[in-house]
Amino acid sequence: MAVAEICLFPLGTETPSVGKYLEPVVNEIKKSGLKYMICPMGTVVEGEIDEILELVKRCHKVIFESGVKRVVISIRIDDRIDKPLTIESKLGI
Image (tube, rainbow, N blue to C red; front, side, top):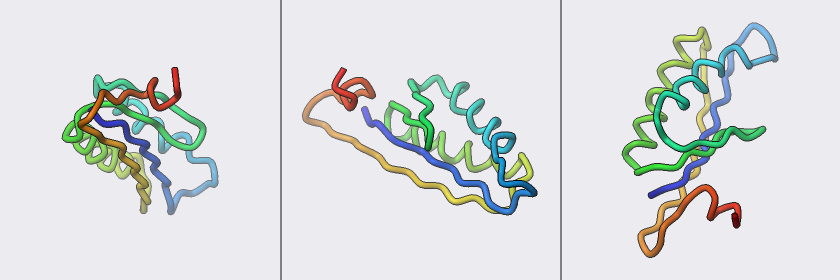
């Protein structure tokens, strides 16, 4: 199980407010079935590495469909095989 932080930065928008461009991305994350936590500067997801990477591809697609001309995507992945890894364990919960 892996935990990843995904941040999409829409560029080339008509306004500095980007919520309307990120809404389809959030919907895609919710539809994924992966455990997730929306944070102020990105979203943390938990799942198998292939599921996470597939989700990133779908987020990449839907943000362009929302009208963005350019996007920068930042992904940080924590994956380990020696013990279970969850969002809660990363938070010390």
